[in-house]
Image 1 (cartoon, helix red, strand yellow):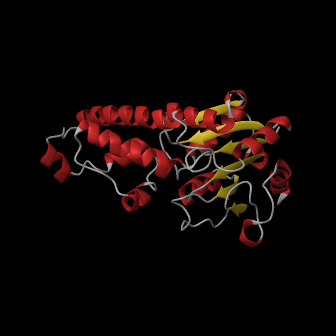
Image 2: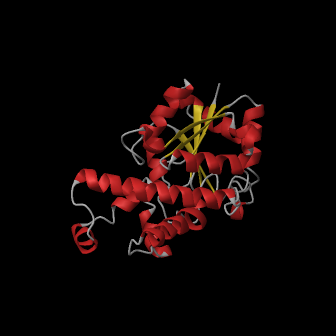
Length: 248
């Protein structure tokens, strides 16, 4: 049985600019952390896999000393846990309020794949509550129940390491030859390729300049496939099946 594995952020919904960035900044303001990331700063930070890891980048020796934060590993881990929990709650509230609509073609392709008997999964470095909230709003309660969700700290190394995709293959009981990944970033693509997976890239707000060498297909979104100006028609289950047959 073939498998369709989605990244979350930038794939199910364009979550980074409209969701994660304001949630980070709201959290910093509420907790008195003297930081507000700009759009340009966050464009670079999205290259770091995982929200806690992005927050950890703040904890330079100078920043810690200037603000009286813990200097030991355990103290910093506890601080980051508190920050990230508040940020996840802020982000989930934005999702629940309908602020992050699904990207074009997501619900359609998921319904097609489910009807065709494909296995469905999400493999993301974001926190699991955030991923489940986005998934449910993107595809609806019924289809979300058919997904295997792998998220957050479930693997020791985050993207661009292949760990999350190797775990997805193990949990789904399938092989790389029978699975397709949908990603939006160069780092996510690198993770999928390192796991031996064919990958469709749907370019998102912060990833237009990423290197997508090695992708099986690069499209603006799933409703606008290959062709002049993305006018080649939607990406369908038949499209994915043809990609699996290439080099088989």
